[in-house]
Image (cartoon, rainbow, N blue to C red; front, side, top):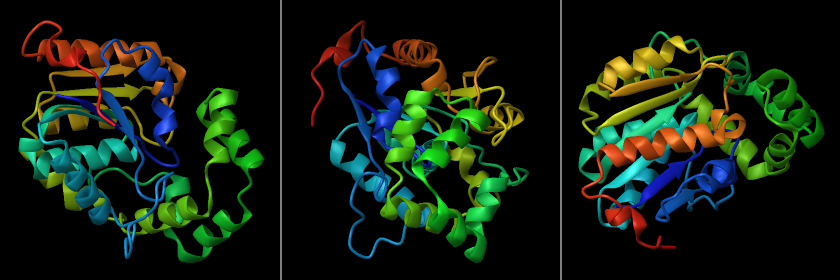
Length: 256
């Protein structure tokens, strides 16, 4: 029963590196979404539906239910997959990704959703400027901020715009299906997140019947970068509560 970690925007699998260093289990994989450090399949339009379908297809290939974890858009997409295909998910954990008709998209998202302003933003984006914004606006540590910004290439910029433009009404469209998420669930949220207010952690927890909602009071939008050891500890406790046996499958080597 492997654990699969899914990043958000504008990240790649690298965003999970700190958390993975604090995990004791070995069967953990962090996947790149198409366009985010991985090629986009031919004809892939980078819409929210296509990302959810892609994730479900990858999970089907694993061949057994997984411990599924997501952050930001990774939270949204993994929750969607767990709603549509509960048979593929043993446990679910996610955070800092609202799925609510009451959630107003944050200011940067609204820029990306605008065809003119979004294109202009991406055309003028520089790694140095973006890293500085992440540090000042979201308290991302300097090293991870510069690493994140360095990987925002042309395919990622295009994917971000197409994803957000497909998701103007995502909350209203996907919220009703949250009741279908039957896997034991954990919500982990940075309480000082200016883009995704912490009130939506409680709302998501209620909608999916989460066993626990953990609010990290000293964290912003990226708890996995600011407090990776605490995120790892919460995940391992969540998995341990639902492990078929002590140690058990969690100690087997991970696949590729």
